[in-house]
Image (cartoon, rainbow, N blue to C red; front, side, top):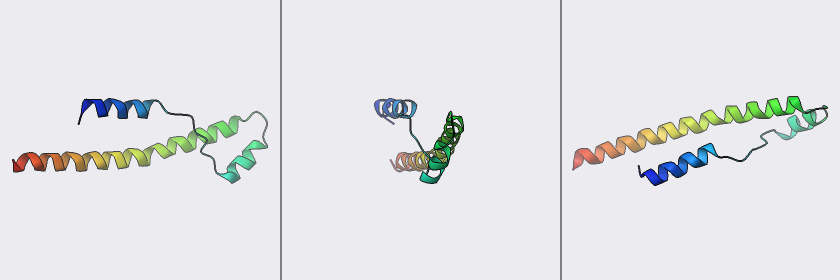
Length: 76
């Protein structure tokens, strides 16, 4: 993999904008509370759970890339 592309991808993974990941129903219930600590906790939990599907897809994509790269090397 090109090191420049790798550095850019790493930078994009590390530096991200904060996101609100609550559904409309959760937001309506949690906005009625004072302080908003429960809302922050639930939002962080949702974002945390969203990371794993992306890691799995990335890992599968990398495995396919590596397999295809090794197959090309074996042919030449």
